[in-house]
Length: 247
Image (cartoon, rainbow, N blue to C red; front, side):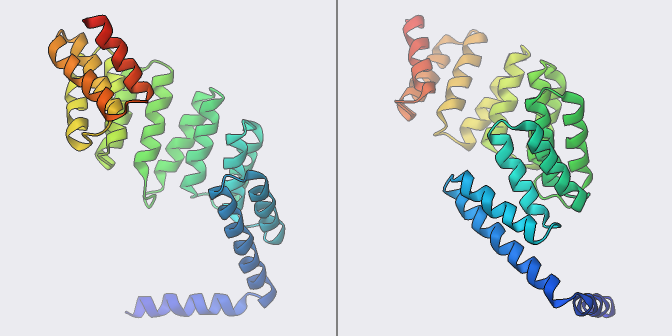
């Protein structure tokens, strides 16, 4: 209790020592940032960029606005600008795990694998980061892009350990299939089907894995199910091609 009271006192003292103008600037910067986010939700990135820039012009230490400008630049394919914005955010907060993760993604798009991996590892150093599975997922993709399937499987396994979700299982199973570890892939895809029975992509992938394992009958069942679940999807079209070929 005494420790809590001390923290509150220090916070109050810090606030008291900050000029009112500085507090107003921080609030204004946050307001511009929130307006920017609303534009992002509407996919109006031009207006969003204007608001984020207003935010950092008002308060040059508002890290979230640098981060979002980096995200927008990355989506536009302006990778050098994205890297600069993420680094600006990290200059304001060296523990900003989201910025490290995003920086890793941008480096990966540029195939700067060593820089990307370094950024991802920095993100994972923050033990308070609430979504480490996202970083491990990105590490898995990094290794998969380089066809280093064993390391990719290891990273996806860590992602699954932190958050057992169908999209992680799908990528893990797909990587196992790429690595020729068919029976392990089938096991993952079956788990994915139990977790998300309406997922046509997992059904399709399970069918492909079963076919590679020599189980044509079960594969056909999964292909038919994939077609039924999402009739107009790419997964359904691929499933129909398999059915035609196998008949």
